[in-house]
Image 1: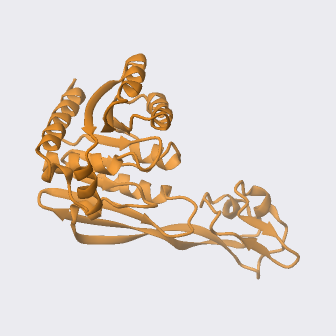
Image 2 (image 1 turned 60 degrees about the vertical axis):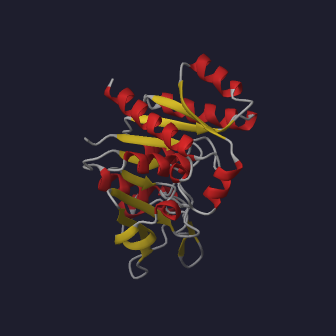
Length: 282
């Protein structure tokens, strides 16, 4: 099967993105699961991959050479992110605010700034059966995981199988970088007013990026019409409903794949995989 990119997202955390992502990836068998929730990756808990490769992700931050620095302050003026400030006898660099844009380095009239690497996180690559696995992990205290996501996107660009992206929650820059170039987006929601509110945020983002999408209702039950009415109004197809069952919650809490413990759920994900691939072909 050729490479297609299917991104799973939602407007908030705890809705069921990872549940849908790992079970869909496992249903497709020969696929590529990519955990882009770099602040809290947890797909590995359900897939248990054998890690074969790990790499550091570094960014460049400024370092001042005080043999050359005249404290002119041009670098401080150039920094749009407040990552530098001028004191009486030195330039103070707040590396956790630095976006590695290089403006300070370029503008310094005395060549008093050099850029040095700083590790912000790691990327792991592994395998479980015929499923390839990648996840990224951002170090504690770092401002953004976007550089990690850029590296991950390079690694999956030439994948020769379907790529399932487990995106970060919300609608931030990290989400945009994780779902870019997707062939299809699956929006996971739950049938509550809060779930509907955040579903709309995610749907408007995907519309802005001009990508096709469908909805999966997690913890489906008596209030599904809340989501169905919205989907009909917005012209978005409801692809699947995952019923609310106590035994499913128990299985999830112990790191089990739902398709391996419930036949109904297995059938739901088989239909979901089939429908999404058909929609992409069309």
